[in-house]
Image (cartoon, rainbow, N blue to C red; front, side, top):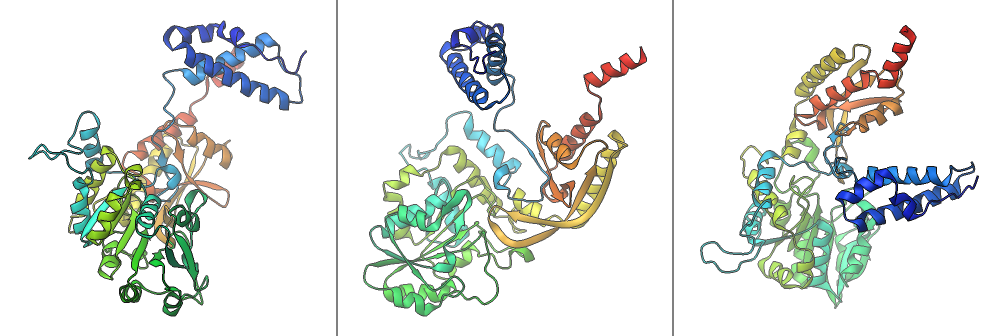
Length: 474
């Protein structure tokens, strides 16, 4: 038997499973999928040490793969999940969830036309960021504002428009690496600016900045190291003295605030988090930040500051390459309106952070009772623990939570985790000392029903188990 018994494209196309696809899908799409499946099979067979199946058997196997990948009823690749990890702004799970008002605003412009770049009163063309710029600037206490597709783009646009070909001074202790292995020095290099490092990893003083401000220096860049913290023998220069230094020397002070806490928040977890509005008040000329994360809206990059500088950014050719679309603008406008609530930003992210532990305890008890009703043999244990904000925000800070730990007879911890992730929607939990649990802090209102349904499904016998039981009885 030939180890590399690879079927031809035509042999696979003749299989019944693929013939059905050819009747309802473009032939080019099906053929391409067949070629990709054959290539994967060739790689598998080349790496296998055992003898492969026959060519005919492989043709049927490839046909099954193709049919499975092209079946219209298969779940979409990007779909809703249940976040029971305890990480509120979970980057891998889509960061900040959006509330009903934000989703309604997005849906309102998604299905038809909208006034994206037209002034309704005059009928004249307008700028798309006008839908959010005034409100964003007002909330930030700034002269002007604009928005791009993420905070990295906001930093690159700001440096490109204001400092390309010139020197930018920044502290060594603030040269962070953000998610996806993107490093701030590389982002600065993309702008065409020349980075000048000052100070050390743990100590940077005002005199370090002063010594570096020679001719050809365009800006001081201060970066909030939002995804790590240096503790112990450390010092850094606050914004106010840096702003005074920038004014004396004719430089621009740019502050990358990172996670986008737009307004002050009373919760202790935010004690060390910079506030965008305060940064503007402290004298930063331009402030950049994420519009998802702590701000709680769709992914984007906010830029606020002096009007003349924001106008320079808006006129730069790069601005068009990083602009946002109507869905982001609609969602961001609704999110910013939620920040007008006197009780604090009414976003899903902030509601999850603010939830009292007493509520989590009650929810954990209700969920445990529901699980025991559908799975009496399962063991549940609710315990106090700690959640994190996540998304590169508030490193080292935790929030009290309640975790419901689960034990299922016959299922090891990794098997239980895999079974929950195989659910529809997939359910992601957390681990501690070999146990699998569900963190109540990050559960949304409809998630408990999905968890109970998954548990009930896992307790039902499979068809093979039912057949085995029938055979035993007979």
